[in-house]
Structures are given as C-alpha cells and as structure tokens.
Length: 53
Image (spheres, rainbow, N blue to C red):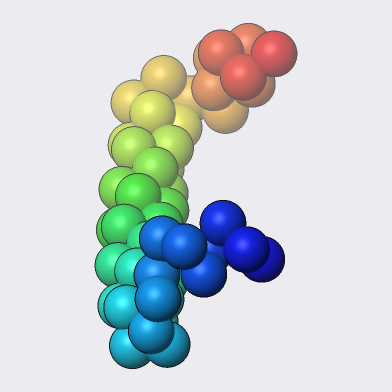
C-alpha cells in the first residue's frame, strides 16, 4: 500500500486512476466481445474454437 500512497497522495487522485482504469477495461471488453461475435459469424463456430486453442 505504501507504493500506492507514494503515487497517489490523495484519495481523489487514486479514485481518478481507478475510474480511468475501469473505463479502459470496460471499453476493451466491449470491443473484444464484438470482435469475437464477428469472428464466429464470419468463420463459424468450429474455426473460432480452433483459433482460441
């Protein structure tokens, strides 16, 4: 926790960092979800499973 306190001295700074991280994580998850769906529709379920192994 000491490294976190060094990087983000106030609670507001830490909350801003966490908020930004969560936004980017959410956006990445949505993009990956759409890409996976597109690959399944384009190649079919069998080829999608081969790509993920």
